[in-house]
Image (cartoon, rainbow, N blue to C red; front, side, top):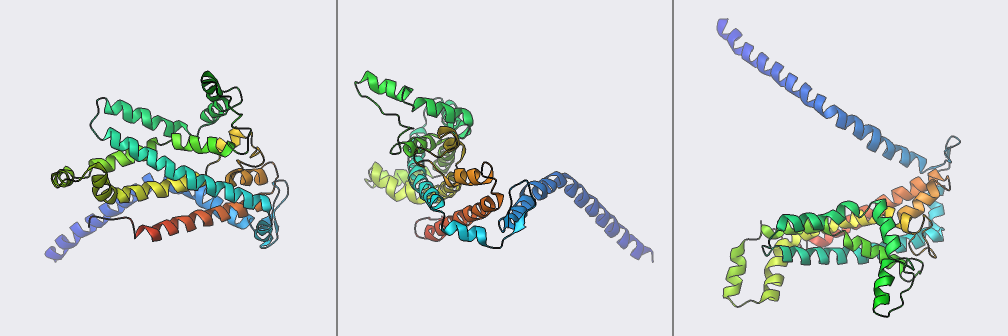
Length: 307
């Protein structure tokens, strides 16, 4: 009897201590769980419901079934915004990653003041999506902006880059490339993890810089490239602030900067078509999910893992 009591007592005490630990853990997690339910899962469920309704913020939503999705098939401006967004993603993301990788390889050579350069290059990533930088970009590429003033010094008469449909999207692509700091830092960390013995052995065998880059750096860095590619593509699909500020919210000139997110905003807030805007948001989610899934499927042919 005494032995049984001694055996049960520690087990019961252990269970009580485990319960208290679990309770404390859930207590610390409670703010995150409440925020997740209130600000993420709740709005997601609400937007899915609203996508099947006609809702103008002033009156209760009216159920209309799949009419919003059917309207999207015939909305030519929506199709144009998808084309602008895909062009932006297809051009801006690869160029940004190329610039980031080139600079990361330059910094990987052990330059003096590495901490300063790393912070300086990362700064545009923190500021690039801000309204202040978008306003600055609009001033730089305006008819009397800094870019045209520099060109005038060489006798070149520049155009109003933002007011022209041929160059407006290009200025936003340039702004996206300029925010290369975040992928640069990740590339730099990846380059530091490549063992130097591979380069030394290749150098002994007579491999040049290009050969070493193609045979060692790219394969061993491919998981990092893939990681950056997925993150930047998802972020590029959600670009909004730059297009909104540069075009004053119109997507102009001639809808040249009408990104999908900007058109969604126009439908939702100035247009008070919340149901249609919710359907557009779900379409964007499906597009991003499909592109990400495609990237994962293609990655098996070009991403190499050491194990």
